[in-house]
Length: 313
Image 1 (cartoon, one colour):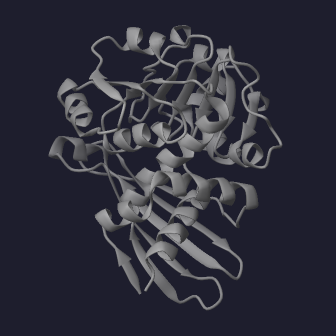
Image 2 (cartoon, rainbow, N blue to C red; image 1 turned 180 degrees about the horizontal axis):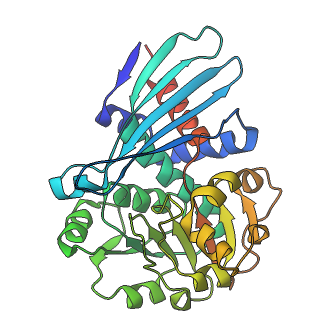
Protein backbone atom coordinates (compact mmCIF):
# COMPACT_ATOMS: atom_id res chain seq x y z
CA UNK A 1 0.00 0.00 0.00
CA UNK A 2 1.23 3.45 -0.91
CA UNK A 3 1.38 6.14 1.78
CA UNK A 4 2.08 9.73 0.72
CA UNK A 5 2.87 12.41 3.26
CA UNK A 6 2.36 16.12 2.67
CA UNK A 7 5.58 16.71 0.74
CA UNK A 8 5.19 13.55 -1.32
CA UNK A 9 1.59 14.44 -2.18
CA UNK A 10 2.66 17.91 -3.28
CA UNK A 11 5.41 16.49 -5.49
CA UNK A 12 3.00 14.01 -7.07
CA UNK A 13 0.51 16.74 -8.05
CA UNK A 14 2.20 19.35 -10.29
CA UNK A 15 -0.39 21.88 -11.35
CA UNK A 16 -0.12 21.33 -15.08
CA UNK A 17 -0.84 17.61 -14.77
CA UNK A 18 -3.45 18.12 -12.04
CA UNK A 19 -5.43 20.69 -14.03
CA UNK A 20 -5.44 18.28 -16.97
CA UNK A 21 -6.59 15.42 -14.71
CA UNK A 22 -9.47 17.55 -13.41
CA UNK A 23 -10.45 18.61 -16.91
CA UNK A 24 -10.67 14.95 -17.97
CA UNK A 25 -12.58 13.92 -14.83
CA UNK A 26 -15.13 16.72 -15.22
CA UNK A 27 -15.49 15.79 -18.89
CA UNK A 28 -15.87 12.03 -18.33
CA UNK A 29 -17.59 12.10 -14.94
CA UNK A 30 -17.78 9.63 -12.04
CA UNK A 31 -20.22 8.48 -9.37
CA UNK A 32 -20.38 11.19 -6.72
CA UNK A 33 -22.94 10.94 -3.89
CA UNK A 34 -23.81 14.07 -1.92
CA UNK A 35 -21.08 14.62 0.62
CA UNK A 36 -21.67 14.38 4.34
CA UNK A 37 -21.36 17.75 6.08
CA UNK A 38 -21.47 17.87 9.88
CA UNK A 39 -21.02 20.70 12.36
CA UNK A 40 -18.77 19.77 15.28
CA UNK A 41 -18.97 21.83 18.45
CA UNK A 42 -15.69 23.06 19.92
CA UNK A 43 -16.29 24.49 23.43
CA UNK A 44 -15.34 28.15 23.61
CA UNK A 45 -14.52 28.42 19.89
CA UNK A 46 -16.16 28.67 16.48
CA UNK A 47 -17.88 25.49 15.37
CA UNK A 48 -15.71 23.09 13.40
CA UNK A 49 -16.80 21.12 10.33
CA UNK A 50 -16.42 17.45 9.41
CA UNK A 51 -16.66 16.56 5.72
CA UNK A 52 -16.88 13.05 4.22
CA UNK A 53 -16.56 13.00 0.44
CA UNK A 54 -16.89 9.71 -1.51
CA UNK A 55 -16.56 9.15 -5.26
CA UNK A 56 -15.78 6.26 -7.58
CA UNK A 57 -15.34 5.12 -11.14
CA UNK A 58 -17.04 1.72 -11.54
CA UNK A 59 -14.45 -1.01 -11.97
CA UNK A 60 -11.56 1.44 -11.60
CA UNK A 61 -11.08 3.34 -8.35
CA UNK A 62 -13.03 4.16 -5.19
CA UNK A 63 -12.03 7.05 -2.95
CA UNK A 64 -13.22 8.80 0.17
CA UNK A 65 -11.83 11.85 1.92
CA UNK A 66 -12.33 12.80 5.55
CA UNK A 67 -11.61 16.44 6.26
CA UNK A 68 -11.94 18.55 9.38
CA UNK A 69 -11.99 22.36 9.36
CA UNK A 70 -11.22 23.99 12.71
CA UNK A 71 -11.32 27.82 12.44
CA UNK A 72 -9.88 28.15 15.95
CA UNK A 73 -6.59 26.68 14.77
CA UNK A 74 -5.61 30.05 13.30
CA UNK A 75 -5.05 31.27 16.84
CA UNK A 76 -2.87 28.24 17.59
CA UNK A 77 -0.68 28.72 14.52
CA UNK A 78 -2.01 25.43 13.15
CA UNK A 79 -3.62 24.73 9.76
CA UNK A 80 -7.39 25.09 9.80
CA UNK A 81 -7.76 22.04 7.57
CA UNK A 82 -6.72 18.45 8.29
CA UNK A 83 -7.62 15.32 6.40
CA UNK A 84 -6.75 11.99 4.80
CA UNK A 85 -7.74 10.38 1.51
CA UNK A 86 -8.26 6.63 1.12
CA UNK A 87 -7.98 5.28 -2.44
CA UNK A 88 -9.13 1.71 -3.13
CA UNK A 89 -9.46 -0.58 -6.11
CA UNK A 90 -12.81 -0.36 -7.86
CA UNK A 91 -12.57 -4.05 -8.74
CA UNK A 92 -11.55 -5.65 -5.43
CA UNK A 93 -12.03 -2.95 -2.77
CA UNK A 94 -8.39 -3.38 -1.78
CA UNK A 95 -6.93 -0.27 -0.14
CA UNK A 96 -4.29 1.09 -2.49
CA UNK A 97 -3.15 4.36 -0.97
CA UNK A 98 -3.46 6.77 1.92
CA UNK A 99 -2.79 10.30 0.73
CA UNK A 100 -2.36 13.47 2.76
CA UNK A 101 -5.85 14.93 2.59
CA UNK A 102 -5.02 18.53 3.42
CA UNK A 103 -2.39 18.82 0.69
CA UNK A 104 -4.61 17.02 -1.81
CA UNK A 105 -7.47 19.39 -0.92
CA UNK A 106 -5.32 22.50 -1.22
CA UNK A 107 -3.91 21.53 -4.59
CA UNK A 108 -7.08 20.17 -6.20
CA UNK A 109 -9.03 23.22 -4.99
CA UNK A 110 -6.51 25.55 -6.56
CA UNK A 111 -6.42 23.44 -9.72
CA UNK A 112 -10.23 23.59 -10.02
CA UNK A 113 -10.12 27.38 -9.79
CA UNK A 114 -7.37 27.49 -12.41
CA UNK A 115 -9.38 25.16 -14.66
CA UNK A 116 -12.34 27.53 -14.33
CA UNK A 117 -10.10 30.52 -15.03
CA UNK A 118 -8.86 28.81 -18.18
CA UNK A 119 -12.43 29.08 -19.50
CA UNK A 120 -13.51 32.30 -17.77
CA UNK A 121 -10.57 34.69 -17.31
CA UNK A 122 -9.55 36.84 -20.27
CA UNK A 123 -6.65 35.37 -22.23
CA UNK A 124 -4.38 38.28 -21.36
CA UNK A 125 -5.14 38.34 -17.63
CA UNK A 126 -1.91 39.19 -15.84
CA UNK A 127 -2.82 41.08 -12.66
CA UNK A 128 -4.01 38.86 -9.82
CA UNK A 129 -5.27 39.82 -6.38
CA UNK A 130 -5.12 37.10 -3.74
CA UNK A 131 -7.51 37.77 -0.85
CA UNK A 132 -6.45 35.68 2.12
CA UNK A 133 -3.06 34.37 3.17
CA UNK A 134 -3.82 30.88 4.42
CA UNK A 135 -2.67 27.54 3.07
CA UNK A 136 -4.62 27.87 -0.16
CA UNK A 137 -3.24 31.24 -1.16
CA UNK A 138 0.12 30.11 -2.52
CA UNK A 139 -1.50 27.20 -4.33
CA UNK A 140 -4.08 29.46 -5.95
CA UNK A 141 -1.44 31.87 -7.17
CA UNK A 142 0.72 29.11 -8.63
CA UNK A 143 -2.25 27.33 -10.21
CA UNK A 144 -3.57 30.47 -11.91
CA UNK A 145 -0.08 31.20 -13.19
CA UNK A 146 -0.18 27.80 -14.89
CA UNK A 147 -3.10 28.86 -17.13
CA UNK A 148 -2.71 32.63 -17.53
CA UNK A 149 0.28 34.96 -18.10
CA UNK A 150 0.28 36.25 -14.52
CA UNK A 151 3.03 38.85 -14.02
CA UNK A 152 1.76 40.90 -11.06
CA UNK A 153 0.34 39.40 -7.85
CA UNK A 154 -0.95 41.41 -4.90
CA UNK A 155 -1.86 39.72 -1.62
CA UNK A 156 -4.30 41.15 0.91
CA UNK A 157 -5.12 39.70 4.31
CA UNK A 158 -6.54 41.05 7.53
CA UNK A 159 -3.19 40.23 9.13
CA UNK A 160 -0.60 41.99 6.98
CA UNK A 161 2.17 39.89 8.50
CA UNK A 162 0.59 36.73 7.09
CA UNK A 163 0.28 38.39 3.69
CA UNK A 164 3.96 39.31 3.82
CA UNK A 165 4.92 35.76 4.81
CA UNK A 166 2.95 34.32 1.90
CA UNK A 167 4.45 36.85 -0.52
CA UNK A 168 7.94 35.82 0.58
CA UNK A 169 7.21 32.18 -0.33
CA UNK A 170 6.10 32.90 -3.89
CA UNK A 171 8.88 32.20 -6.36
CA UNK A 172 7.52 32.27 -9.89
CA UNK A 173 9.74 33.40 -12.79
CA UNK A 174 8.67 36.76 -14.16
CA UNK A 175 6.07 37.35 -11.43
CA UNK A 176 6.31 40.30 -9.05
CA UNK A 177 4.56 39.90 -5.70
CA UNK A 178 3.49 42.64 -3.31
CA UNK A 179 1.23 43.16 -0.29
CA UNK A 180 -1.87 45.35 -0.57
CA UNK A 181 -2.91 47.75 2.16
CA UNK A 182 -5.93 49.06 0.23
CA UNK A 183 -8.23 46.19 -0.74
CA UNK A 184 -10.52 48.31 -2.89
CA UNK A 185 -7.70 49.78 -4.95
CA UNK A 186 -6.15 46.36 -5.48
CA UNK A 187 -9.49 44.86 -6.50
CA UNK A 188 -10.23 47.64 -8.98
CA UNK A 189 -6.90 46.99 -10.74
CA UNK A 190 -7.06 43.18 -10.82
CA UNK A 191 -7.84 41.00 -13.83
CA UNK A 192 -8.31 37.97 -11.55
CA UNK A 193 -9.42 38.17 -7.91
CA UNK A 194 -9.16 34.95 -5.94
CA UNK A 195 -10.63 34.77 -2.43
CA UNK A 196 -9.80 32.01 0.04
CA UNK A 197 -10.98 33.07 3.48
CA UNK A 198 -13.35 31.97 6.22
CA UNK A 199 -15.21 35.27 6.05
CA UNK A 200 -18.87 35.59 7.03
CA UNK A 201 -19.12 39.11 5.60
CA UNK A 202 -18.49 40.35 2.04
CA UNK A 203 -14.92 41.40 1.33
CA UNK A 204 -15.16 42.13 -2.39
CA UNK A 205 -17.76 44.61 -3.64
CA UNK A 206 -19.31 44.20 -7.04
CA UNK A 207 -18.84 47.86 -7.87
CA UNK A 208 -15.08 47.36 -7.59
CA UNK A 209 -14.95 44.85 -10.45
CA UNK A 210 -13.66 46.28 -13.70
CA UNK A 211 -14.93 45.15 -17.12
CA UNK A 212 -13.35 41.80 -17.97
CA UNK A 213 -12.56 40.90 -14.36
CA UNK A 214 -12.80 37.32 -13.16
CA UNK A 215 -13.81 36.68 -9.52
CA UNK A 216 -12.79 33.33 -8.05
CA UNK A 217 -14.59 32.56 -4.77
CA UNK A 218 -13.14 29.61 -2.90
CA UNK A 219 -13.24 30.06 0.84
CA UNK A 220 -16.84 30.50 1.96
CA UNK A 221 -18.20 26.94 2.03
CA UNK A 222 -21.31 27.36 4.19
CA UNK A 223 -24.56 29.23 3.45
CA UNK A 224 -23.76 31.57 6.35
CA UNK A 225 -20.39 32.55 4.85
CA UNK A 226 -19.56 34.81 1.95
CA UNK A 227 -16.69 36.70 0.35
CA UNK A 228 -18.59 38.91 -2.12
CA UNK A 229 -21.67 41.10 -1.95
CA UNK A 230 -25.00 40.94 -3.77
CA UNK A 231 -23.82 43.47 -6.32
CA UNK A 232 -21.05 41.12 -7.46
CA UNK A 233 -23.56 38.34 -8.07
CA UNK A 234 -25.88 40.74 -9.89
CA UNK A 235 -23.18 42.06 -12.23
CA UNK A 236 -21.43 38.82 -13.09
CA UNK A 237 -21.89 35.88 -15.39
CA UNK A 238 -21.99 33.10 -12.79
CA UNK A 239 -20.31 29.69 -13.00
CA UNK A 240 -19.81 26.96 -10.40
CA UNK A 241 -17.88 23.74 -9.87
CA UNK A 242 -21.12 21.80 -9.26
CA UNK A 243 -24.63 23.20 -9.12
CA UNK A 244 -25.81 21.04 -6.23
CA UNK A 245 -22.86 21.99 -4.06
CA UNK A 246 -22.88 25.69 -4.84
CA UNK A 247 -26.65 26.03 -4.40
CA UNK A 248 -26.70 24.23 -1.07
CA UNK A 249 -23.47 25.42 0.53
CA UNK A 250 -22.07 28.47 -1.28
CA UNK A 251 -23.15 31.52 0.68
CA UNK A 252 -22.00 33.83 -2.13
CA UNK A 253 -24.89 32.45 -4.19
CA UNK A 254 -27.30 31.14 -1.57
CA UNK A 255 -27.66 34.53 0.13
CA UNK A 256 -28.35 36.65 -3.00
CA UNK A 257 -30.78 33.96 -4.19
CA UNK A 258 -32.64 34.19 -0.89
CA UNK A 259 -32.66 37.98 -1.23
CA UNK A 260 -34.14 37.75 -4.73
CA UNK A 261 -31.11 39.35 -6.38
CA UNK A 262 -30.44 36.33 -8.59
CA UNK A 263 -32.03 32.90 -9.12
CA UNK A 264 -30.64 29.40 -9.50
CA UNK A 265 -31.12 29.89 -13.23
CA UNK A 266 -28.54 32.68 -13.10
CA UNK A 267 -25.84 30.00 -13.03
CA UNK A 268 -24.74 29.72 -16.62
CA UNK A 269 -22.68 26.53 -16.40
CA UNK A 270 -20.72 24.21 -14.15
CA UNK A 271 -17.25 22.81 -14.75
CA UNK A 272 -18.60 19.68 -16.42
CA UNK A 273 -20.44 21.81 -18.98
CA UNK A 274 -17.35 23.91 -19.57
CA UNK A 275 -15.05 20.88 -19.85
CA UNK A 276 -17.33 19.13 -22.35
CA UNK A 277 -17.77 22.26 -24.44
CA UNK A 278 -21.49 22.52 -23.78
CA UNK A 279 -20.87 26.10 -22.67
CA UNK A 280 -18.21 28.36 -24.15
CA UNK A 281 -17.46 30.35 -20.98
CA UNK A 282 -17.40 34.14 -20.77
CA UNK A 283 -19.52 35.93 -23.35
CA UNK A 284 -17.04 38.72 -24.15
CA UNK A 285 -13.78 40.31 -23.04
CA UNK A 286 -15.81 42.98 -21.23
CA UNK A 287 -17.99 40.58 -19.25
CA UNK A 288 -17.42 40.10 -15.53
CA UNK A 289 -17.28 36.44 -14.56
CA UNK A 290 -17.76 34.85 -11.15
CA UNK A 291 -16.76 31.29 -10.28
CA UNK A 292 -18.00 29.82 -7.00
CA UNK A 293 -16.54 26.54 -5.80
CA UNK A 294 -17.33 24.55 -2.69
CA UNK A 295 -15.35 21.49 -3.66
CA UNK A 296 -16.40 18.23 -5.24
CA UNK A 297 -15.42 14.65 -4.51
CA UNK A 298 -14.54 14.01 -8.15
CA UNK A 299 -11.75 16.58 -7.82
CA UNK A 300 -10.24 14.60 -4.95
CA UNK A 301 -10.62 11.35 -6.86
CA UNK A 302 -8.89 12.80 -9.92
CA UNK A 303 -6.01 14.07 -7.80
CA UNK A 304 -5.69 10.85 -5.81
CA UNK A 305 -5.58 8.74 -8.97
CA UNK A 306 -2.95 11.03 -10.47
CA UNK A 307 -0.81 10.83 -7.32
CA UNK A 308 -1.20 7.06 -6.99
CA UNK A 309 -0.41 6.30 -10.61
CA UNK A 310 2.63 8.59 -10.50
CA UNK A 311 4.04 7.07 -7.30
CA UNK A 312 2.73 3.50 -7.06
CA UNK A 313 5.34 0.76 -6.53
